[in-house]
Length: 119
Length: 107
Image (cartoon, rainbow over all chains, first blue to last red):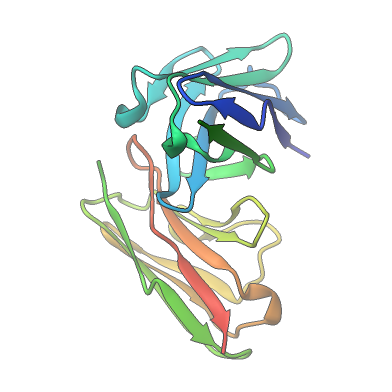
């Protein structure tokens, strides 16, 4: 059974950097999949942040480009999200999810982690 | 970006009712359209991918249809556990985009 688990600080200072880890079990991130980050806030609904392939190809959502970085560590089977210069607008539930291809959808999700940006 | 317009935003229905939720894309997404169910405090759950392919374990009362720009999610006979928020998601091109959601409530 594929499982994803997000971890990281639940509170980040305004103008600081949000750093999250997604730990994957039941699948290898070295397989031909993509790994995505999605966030959910009351004001903006569900927002796709970006994705990274097993080979390290990365696509970001343009509004976040310049502030966001996604990376992976195959030896630890983990994916990482860094979002810098955060503001209150970045307060959200953050999810990691797997996507095999465009037909599969985001099929497995983590339970999510709430990150609050404090001033 | 492809905009996904989902309707209605909310829907009140009774157990046993047939309900339909629609999602319209601002440009064609072929059948790269997925439907999710989300319950409070839980991650979205993939119900249907590729517009009409039911995920394993999802009851057959759920069905999806459409292609191009217009899609529907139908629940043929609502059960108590179906009351939740439903989202569509296009994975035709990045940035992937979600609909705004439909909150399905008990009447």
